[in-house]
Image 1 (tube, one colour):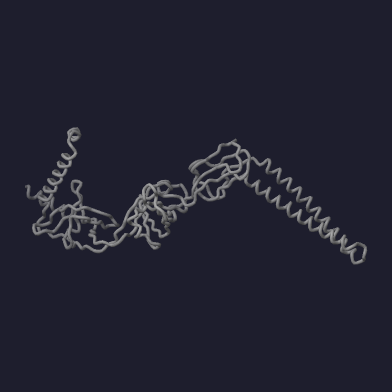
Image 2: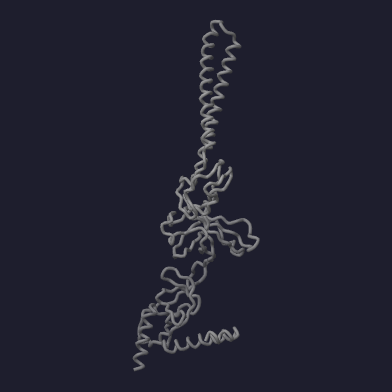
Length: 368
């Protein structure tokens, strides 16, 4: 059959497919009418106002992501994490040789010690001269000079302590720590490499705060307000709602759509213990938001059955329960939207499977 279809023109194939669909529906209708005497629980179709929504594709991004770079120079002696590793905040990512930095600390400590000695000597000399000045043993100029020397010694001590603090800070850069809890996406260096200030070391992102990035067509911009609620539809049927969104003020030059960032908290923990349950940057999701209200028909899922790849309901007619094809839309909980096939005030069976079972029994009885 597939070989025959391969040589058929496309229009011919479509005509045959449509003809077969019509034939199947006719046969189903012929053999699916159940006597009106068989009473089943039924519901009346009521079209009512429902919120009309727009659903778009979106990509998950990490709000907090970046690259850690070297803040000092040296040779890498240890790498503690690799790509895809989970890293707690404050963990040591790598270590760099600290020979020069340690020497700078020792030199700064020596300067502090010398400055403290000079400051002590200058203060003692000032105290002696202050005691001699009332006796007329020294001049006013000598006292003023002693005060200036004491102030200069104090300033040199403060500068030496600042240099020591700077040296200690530079030494701390030889141990690179993770700035936040997250996942390593790229390691830029190897053990033994010499790095300079500004050399990229690790890249990564945090799983705690994520955002969905979507492109909004120009025709729907009027529906977006600061109070708009966005539903993020996950692959596991869960929904995350958020009103924290940023709409770009310019259109993309390629798609002519406006980018929309929807920020939300990751509800699935920030660890990697269960990868299947994780929401990760780079994943596809769908976003949904309201764009108005329209009259829609919704039925319980139990009222809809499937026959030969066709969705149908049992419609209550003068001839009995008749299987009628319908076109389905969205599903919310145990309710399903009927796009076409039914009209307002129609009566359908609440449980299509019950009517189907009765139909089969009736067909079997009539065939005996």
